[in-house]
Image (tube, rainbow over all chains, first blue to last red; front, side, top):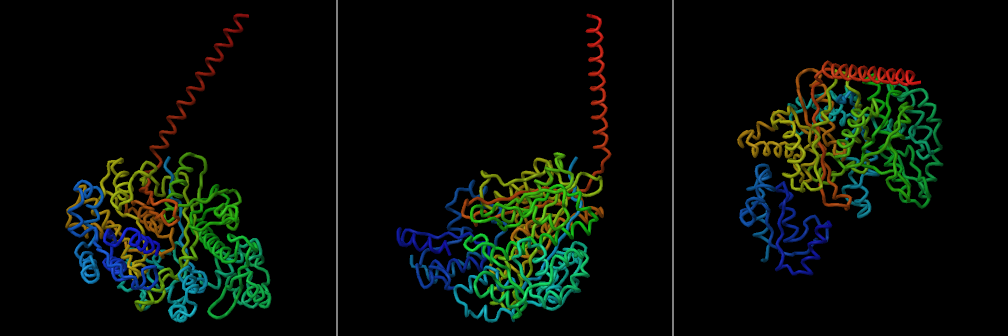
Length: 105
Length: 517
């Protein structure tokens, strides 16, 4: 809920065109929920983004577009282990679905 | 000499009514929408005591099933009665809620827990036949209160209810009119934590044949805070628990570290024993009322019953080396340092790889890893996945990076070195400690050489730091006392020679002085 409030505030102060959301969720279901929240609004109607369609560009950190922008040494130190643990394809699919449907930028 | 794990106990308290009144999910829901469908149907979605008894993970927690046997039980575990519903197991029991209310009153020393006369009369016989309940306990309970007196306190807002379904059986009163930290809800929470810890400690002493007078120090490691408005977490649960277990020779203190609290407490206990400060140290933790029904809404939304319906408790006795029980290797402590970094990879590196490197061991040299052992059915509906399985995959991936196993062997590694989750989502309860009983038994039976206990904690929840936390240690088969005894003998001989030389020197000096006169 607090994250939702912070993202909403950032969108207001910085402008949605200057923001990209990068998710680290480990489960496709929760990644999809988070992606939906920052694009179409909070589907659970529990937080500050209920009914607020920010339409932000949203990616999972395991998506190729993001990985290729990260220094290889940093990736090896911080992400290589989780790359073997997480289901990158399922996570990408879950987030991409929401990005394609609701992201305005 | 390395300290040993001399005994363990694990207890659960079936607490569906405490769940309804004091679980935070339910309290927040009541605050937001008292007429919500979730609350309206809540009693229909709770499990009866007998159903909870037949829940395979609970039977595993108290030791009637091994984790390996649990793995063979078809999932979903909550459907149907798949195992024999037994109240008592080798590690402890699953206490029913009505008896627990009596335990809460029994351990309350400020006349705050009131039970209704008729209810007390009904359960006194049952309490009397409990192996840990004494005649003195019954006497302390007294005759109970009139229903009118309880209703009056509830109506004037100075107490909160204790119920069994729609039957009012008692209340917990506030300890101060204005102090937020002594209000009735907090007293209910803390008294429940204390009572479940008393049950765990009494169980530990009884089932392991330990004289309470032997205990010199108690470390309590739950996630509750007891104190008043001037010291919110002043403590001290530890002594308050020991007082009701006959530990008259003990003092103690509380250690906190979110879910990692018990692992920190065990390291501290091991250090106190190894240093020779105390011979017998107990680590104990009671249950967290706030976490009852934590993922209840999500579970009900998926057509499941509300599964988080028990308080958890445990106790571990750390003692001087007896040459028999498994040792805690005090040279194996892994710690997540302030400078370690908070990515999962950095955490696992600090907790698993670094200590093993120090000892010249490989990840595959550890028979079993005890990670965050949450029951998967509890967390999956809320989108948190299978927590223990994710942890085991992380350790396996670390082994791949260290070229100990091939990437294709990850599932095999998880199978060989992992265990299914069987602990309720009670914060500090699942993280590492539930496996100690199983590992101790396997090591004593000669079927296991070593296990790594890993405690991990999410410190950001207190909003004091964004750091993650964790601490780990190895428990191993006891190599026996012979070598250490020999070392002691050599030391004794050295000391005797030194003393003789000193005496000889003194005598010579005296002779010289006498000669000089």
